[in-house]
Length: 517
Image 1: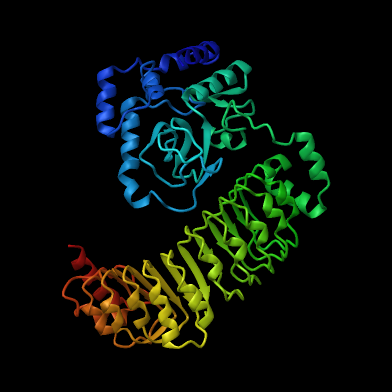
Image 2 (image 1 turned 120 degrees about the vertical axis):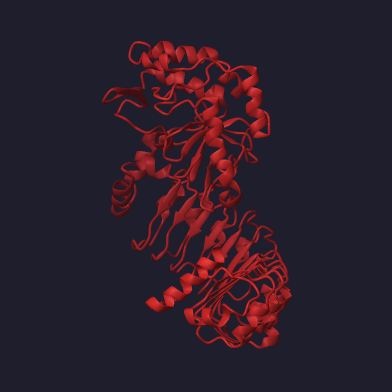
């Protein structure tokens, strides 16, 4: 590690002498121990060694990591503390992807990601001490506010520094002059932010994959595509190489009738194909890294090409003609399925999917409700519309004892008694829904949130005030006036549905202000 750093300094000494001058002297063992005490865990040997060579760089340094600063130990701790404080509320936000799949835990924040660099925009290069199943402790990754796709940049710090050294020796860099400030960036073609550059690198560095098709092969494949797809790829990606290596692809309302070129997109993690004319999804069988797939509003009938996509977690088939969910039975990581506005009636193929947590369906009949009752693994359920079902048939939902959230859209019910069996229910959301008798809500012992939008026709709403657990509600102003003084405590009414006059707004604001005191 020390040798690589010195070779980087020596190679850039003539063109960028400021690099060597900006590096700080090493930290002491005592400083490392204090840092570990603050973190609550030991620093890995490589990171200790790095800081015992140089304690980062000066505040106005040149950016040791291709223009991004090498954070001092105190700066690293300061940056880490910001993320650690946010972890509880935001750690598991969805929409994050690991590349390669299964190497980095797919979350927004992880206190075991130690930032060694930053870009002043909320993004970092870090050392990952809590990798996913296929990763290695100490791997170098990107993460942060804008970094939804997280890459394993290098297997470890040693490899990362060797890559920087090799890049410097090869002259594959650019010296950037910004007024009186000078820095450097990866590549010979002008200033490129390193966190943008990694998207086009073979990663992890020093471990280029062997099975990737060469540029000539990709070009031959590209020339064999129809004119429409060639134009689409050229316009959106600039080159076929960038298309086949893309991690996110979005083709919405583009009139697609086939998706054959996607068979080459082995690395794609998020794929949006909503509102096209796609009938066959056979090409997706090769998208082995796929995590999120949006197929809504396509005449798709057969899901069998998805049955071996072991990383698939979220699937949207709203408005398709799918009737058979059995190809999904073997998906080990499927968490969310939106099957609204489909002719699916048998939900039993979902029973083996132990990872399934969120399900959205529409107009369930008695058969569908019976199969729904077997999905004990569910935590969130959305029902839009109801067929002609009896209260006894609806009671099947009460067998879902692990539900935390229920959302009802466009339904008309006599009561909510069927929810009494959902003993862990925490949140109930109703949109454009009518309920003759709301009193059952008061008996839901763990319910803390009730949201109603477009629900003027709800009866016995005042009985909701008997709830001992409710603390947050979203209702209309008229419903707010009915309820606000019936509780024995202040309720969070900070979000309202519908409109209010100025006078009504004043009344509402006065209550909200009192509740916050």
